[in-house]
Length: 271
View 1 (spheres, one colour):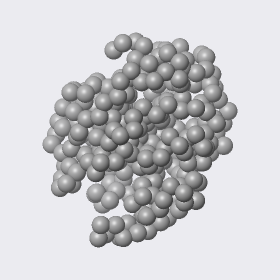
View 2: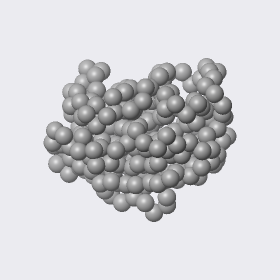
View 3: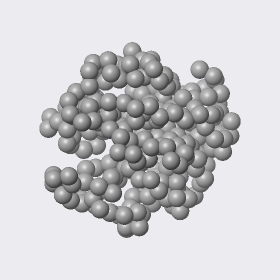
View 4: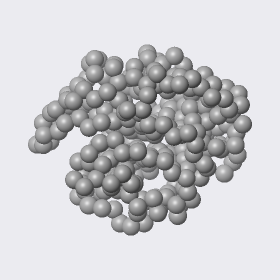
């Protein structure tokens, strides 16, 4: 790896299921995807947890692909397997420290979607300090936001603005003193505009307009950073899931803040 560039990926893995049949992907499918598209840090969404423990096969394949450090948390019951929960994770080649988890306030919406009764599952994010050796504190988050569009809720709705305000108030606490990577399934195409409206800091969103990240042709996944230098590259790779693997090469140049320093206690405690 170029020491001045960090390869960061985000991937909604759909419980390690195939998009159409929802059958389990072949053993080795995750490993092969990452061997062909290596990353230094991978933010995962819709990871299955069983009795509080992450999918063993997934963890095994991540380790084989060189991502030997792992943090994760379940967030909600799984709609794919009644035995499991779905959650968010971070896997990395570098140590991950000071894990934190945050769940968004759930408005409890219900809707009839594609012939099925849906209710809004809990969403949130997991964060950890990444010991990449850049001399500046770097914190990475894997997030999964509410799919309000599936419930007929538009971007101007109060539920959407409440979620954006909650997100940006939570991550803004760190943004002035550290490099922050916010990668995941945003479930919204208007994320950059929401950041301008609700965040106190400027954000660079890596996925360019017109680049789709899902099988249904929407741009829902992204990697946002709070430093000025644009990504060296952005690639999107089709996978067995309904979401593609998005990878951005993040440069060391332009990182905010100085040496590692502790921040004040969050006003949004873990729930």
